[in-house]
Amino acid sequence: MIENPYWNPFLETLSPELLQDLQLKKFRRIVAWAFERSPYYRRIYREAGLEPGDIRTYEDVRHVPKLDKSHLKVAQSEEPVPYGSRLCVPLERVTEFHQTSGTTGVPVYQADSWEDWEWWSESWAYILWAQGYRPRDRVFIPFGYNIFVAFWSAHYGCEKIGCEVVPGGVLDTAARILKVRELGATAMMGTPTYMLNMADLARSRLGMDPEKLTVNKITCAGEPGASIRSTKKRLEEAWGAKVYDHAGATEIGAWCYECVEQPGALHVNDGLFLIEIEDLDTGEPITEPGVKGKMIITAFDRLAQPCIRFDSKDIIEWHPEPCSCGRTFRMITDGVQGRADDITKVKGVLLSPSAIEEIVRSFEGIGNEYEVVVERVEDIEKITLKIEMTAEGESNREELLNRLRDELRLKTNLGYALEVHPWGSLTRYEVKARRFKDLRKPH
Image (tube, rainbow, N blue to C red; front, side):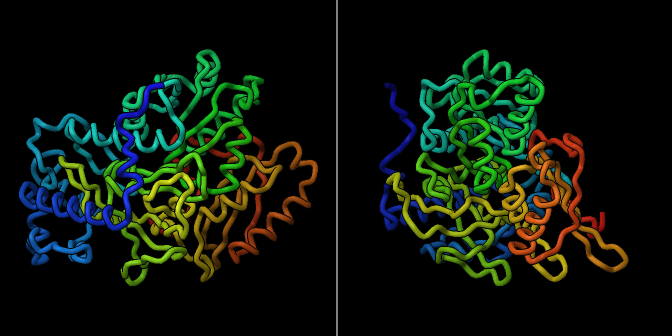
């Protein structure tokens, strides 16, 4: 069998000390590159009194200014159009354009050179090989190919390790399912939401049992769901396949992945990225396991528009144990557990939307789709959970609702108004779901 020339067992099993030395060298290199070639990076580093030569130790990394999405948008407003002053290569070396989804306002435009696109593919080769993808796999990607990066890079990563790729972009959901059956696809990729919706449609409209199709593995992205145990369980039972999580972003890259051991944690790709975790309030570094914080990330090898100490707002925590797969890359427990922007206070209680998903998806009799609405009614905060019920759930409606209400109170310390909506009436999402709606916030 053809082995993967891009999987580097030496790097993935390197000792922590040698890996940290490598990371420091690569961090110093990308900072010097950005300082020399980007007007924006040079300006902010000089304003901070920083020269690339000042970074001598691993601890010096924290002296480098952080950026968040607002900084990227400021830089983007400058020359050259449309990428702005973060750009480190001439425009003629840009070969790939993508942009963020723009759900938080103006999208960020991302320029990649051909070398960057090869780097994207390599980061995905790590993911795919760890999840059992091999040249014998036929991978169906039910993704609407457009300017959002999503599974573009996964497509090329599959090709890089020798998989056959079937792009299902222009097909509707039913046609995609039929194509999976026709071709005997062995793997798929998508958001947890869309994978569940595909399974529902296969049963309800096509009279097909998705568990009996040939798909044996699914790689998810875009939402925390594939690392939420109850959602993963639903997915694996629906498709009769192993479901793996990974995390990435347009402005960052594909930076972490679950392996075939499924240890309840994701490996961070310490060879291509530097991941730091900071306390949400103080900004102090978190190095011990089991403490949640926000991720600050650097992509070592992305050259056209470097990503250096980017405040992603993703909430993660270090995992305490090494993985039985043998990789020495660090791990994060339960993957990305949400975003700092999403954690909100309701009736004085901190609430994470992923906590609600874990509860709702753990109940048999409740459909895959739900919606949470937080609003202020006459100065009183109200939280409403809208759900759909299966036929089995409807047969025992009151008992199920009482158990759901009690579990929500126990796990989130909040009371909810529960609404049961007709089957199929709640919004179905194809890419990222927007189930949590806070109507208290100004628009």
